[in-house]
Image (cartoon, rainbow, N blue to C red; front, side, top):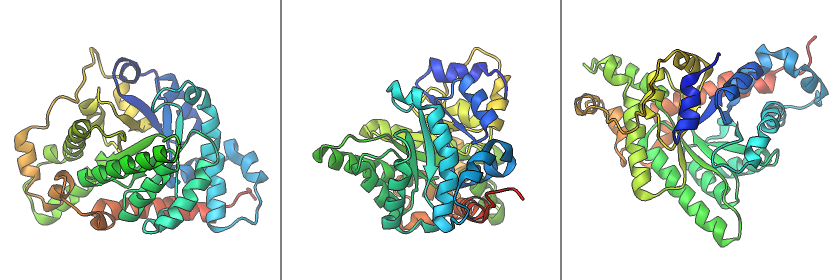
Length: 347
């Protein structure tokens, strides 16, 4: 990563908030020099930094109890990384600006259907630092856990989320949780609703090819953007407190199409680099609609209709949506399970 005028403009000249999507120390330092004000992590990213940057984490790994196993071990490894970065950005958090100075840590993706389990683990993650945001899945159980966590005053983000009905259900749960928190005299924390725009595009691309659809690639790469723009309009209409977070971006186009929105944008180093050479002047894109003919073609895909229509899915269907299964598997097989099996000392 390098000096990035576009991200500096986005983070200081618009309502958009830039969060860095990586757990590599050098990348984090560069991102924050370019305007990042928070960080997203997940089991995949935690495993990535502990596996590829052993020199940085070696002392912390060596200090852990070598007999740790299962969830306890995965949580301890997550705490090393998330706790380190939470300390690095605490001064931003203490300034008190909404959406700034936070670091995400995610619950076990093997348990996306167990709300009681998730609430218990969320409380452990939140105890590490006041600026930890607990990531919960936008499954029916995860959204129930989300409401409970909001009611308890925790900072939360609903991840594994790709559709308008998911982020609307998250916002309603956040609203209920906030009311409960206030009634109990608790201060509500930061509430985020993720929509993984690029991962939705990836899924729909395969669906379109598998079905022999004539939907174009130029349409597919606007599917996630269309969904989050529709959700953003509904959020503003209903006055939801939860803040939308576009994530899983696949190109600069995802960021530029949403620039200026009051969203927290999770931007990975690869996407940040692709924005670095973008010439000015820079313009906000959130008010530019996705063309109607693009929407019409995408609507020929039943899976897009599920994602785009506010009532496209019921909560019990969220866990079976194609993008949810794909991403959950990655978080498990390339994130959480490798953490459970990771050696904590080099031989």
